[in-house]
Image (tube, rainbow, N blue to C red; front, side):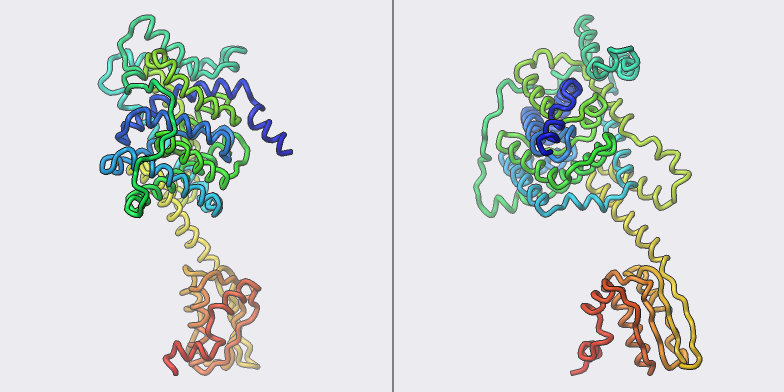
Length: 497
């Protein structure tokens, strides 16, 4: 069974994976160079990282067909470290980032993705689509008309080529776009910005490099805060991308294995002179849209990237940036969840607020982690507020025994605890009180505290109080943290000796 699934993941879609891998490799080159420039390091640091991370994650990752490499979000976190301490400390930080991510995998932190609501994922996707589009704008400002013509032609090829009978379904249209536009600019000598203008491509293969930093506590105090931030952002972006690719391909992935895989890939990257990276939503979408589904597509992308930049740099350097801009604009359009726009009219206000806030925070700060954390926090608050309204109380009175019965229904937790305590009429002239929680559930210490507060206050008023109907979970939390039936604990709280 394991052998069959492994064979399917690697060789179940050979033609599609090879062709899509070529497209992704070509699209990775300018991005890896650009992210190196952002981080303040030589272009080869980003290119070596992209090669290494893609190859390693193809083998050990938890999501087949997902592309991982050097990314902009990670590069932004490295700027200060590189400026203050230099490349060697960045390599040490990259290795520590990988170690922390492996630890996160063994702690099963990948399971935390279940706390990220669908609304936050949509907001994250839309924000990334906007950021991908915005990243192309510098290539479209203060340029000649040729760039606009080439970009428009590229988009035309991307969207129209698939309609050509037979051929359209055989070759990915982004690959056709890159080849055709490169041919046109070369044959007609059109003077436009090319990949070669982005920075010098490396001319040697990477070698094993252990970071030249002192192995002491001082080094750890320098690199640990950066490594922790890189590990968190890298895992968050990777797990979000895995969720999106899961949806696009209608398949599942192992999120905890992905955490460990990202860690192993980053350790390997740091040991060959590369920077830390993570999954790339843009490249992953290119891969899936170009027909890539298996691990082979990620492996091909990484290996071809290295071969092209080291051995075919003369050919690669003449690719016009307009061709890659057209591909990335296609990615932006494909990534954006267009159904979310009409959804603004039909979905609940709280859902729209969570989605729009996630988009605004990510786009405004360029910090994907901050946007997702904000979205999750808002979604949690809205959810807590919503279910707190599901708690209500049915009151009844038995005259023969002078008993008031409070029958609670719903969820009692920090947001509904005060309403629970305020339900009781503490001054009512009755002898007995029954608090029936058979159809209620106590979730946290705030709920238990509210029960203690109510019972103790009622007993101080001379009433006989009995709590009935507790389910097993409620009984457990009340036994552990409640004090209303523990005279010694009550004595301590009241200041007795």
